[in-house]
Amino acid sequence: MLIDNHHRVHNYLRVSLTNNCNLRCFYCMPNEELPYTPPASLMQVDEIEVIAKTFVDLGVTKIRLTGGEPLVRKDAAEIIERLSKYPVELTITTNAVRLHDFFDLFIKTGIRSLNISLDTLQSQRFKDITKRDNFQLVYDNLLRAVELGFSVKVNVVTMKGVNDDEILQFVELTKNLRLHIRFIEFMPFSGNQWKNENVIGWQEILKIVGDAYDMVPLVRNAHDTAKKYKVIGHEGTFAVISTMTSPFCGDCNRMRLTADGKMKNCLFSKGENDLLAALRRGDDIQPLILQNIKSKAAERGGQITKDFKTADAFTMENRSMINIGG
Ligand code: SAM
Ligand code: SF4
Image (cartoon, rainbow, N blue to C red; front, side, top):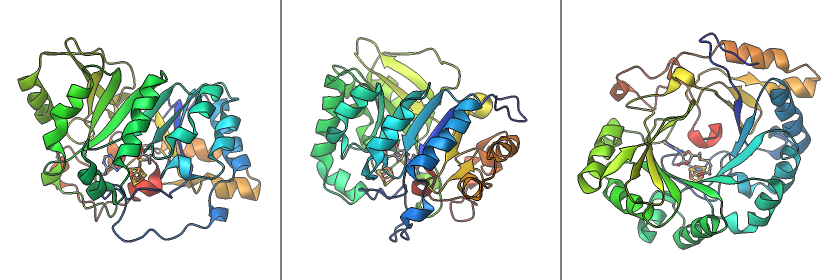
């Protein structure tokens, strides 16, 4: 089992398949074009499988594929087929631009739950945020996923002055659709234009919803990152992921593997262990995994203090979100 120095058992691995993406969300990636990562520097299919298997042998029971956009990788289908053979809950976080090509594969491989990112219900605003004109495609794929019976969580990075005027419209979607809206507090990463003034926190979001609807809190399950609620009478639910104003690190069970094969024990960790280089040298990667877990900080990688307002995306030692894998 993977237990850190704060007695937390780690059984959930997020694997980034690529740092490439078909959208350009300003909060996720630097403004300038990302340097091209040669495919040889990325984990290849066999390598992903070997590393994932090592984690499964160490007690991992859930794997989420992410990126960049995981579905732009040419061999995404093969990776999904291979990982679906292991005794884990396999899930995926996607921007849904290519989702229509993958529904059959997901059904065949037992993927039942999808996290879909969508920050606005307005076509022009979608273009402003992502620099691509794909709103209708993404929205249609989202509705299709619900229709096909997938459990769908919608990730909405909620930012003051950008899309906070749409909070109620997103909650209204849960009236007749069985989906789970998750408002994510805006987080600072290298090069992502984060400003404390743009953060709209959990309590503010609750006030906006509470002033408009009768709602009830839902039970928190162990390891939940989301504080969950339901508007009375609605089919779906909504939640806030309050990383900035009320972190949930106390029972964190998550680890990350970047597309170039580095292990990170937290979204905000400074340190990384290069599992891919070790694997390619023919070394056993288990000791590196254990070392990485033992070095995990108690909260937010030790990089964001209780007063998150003092955080500075420029001086934090980290990658951009697109290079980590969300
Ligand atoms: N491309 C896929 C997608 O967008 O769903 C997967 C990768 S993306 C990095 C994973 C999640 O991280 C998305 O839901 C995205 O909205 C979120 N994210 C990216 N940058 C963020 C930031 N600065 N603050 C909060 N969430 C962020
Ligand atoms: Fe791409 Fe997802 Fe980042 Fe947007 S949030 S740029 S879709 S990786």
